Length: 68
Ligand SMILES: [Zn+2]
Image (cartoon, rainbow, N blue to C red; front, side, top):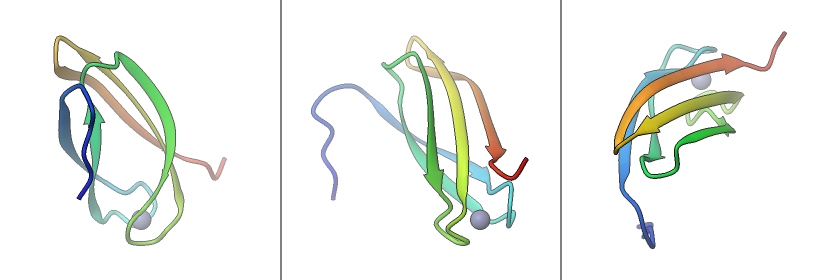
C-alpha cells in the first residue's frame, strides 16, 4: 500500500499504446502538468505519459510510445 503525503490522487485508466491492454496510473491532481515515463504493467515497455490537471480534475491526458 502506498501513502501519499499530500494531495489528491486519482486512478486514471487507459490502453497501452503498445499492447492495448487496459492499464491504470495514479495521477496527482494537485500538481498541474506532468510528463513522465512509466513502464506498461503488462508488456513492460516504456510509455510516455503527459497530463494536465486543473482544480482537481484531469483536463488532458496523452500517451505516446518511445518507438519513433
Ligand atoms: Zn503494454
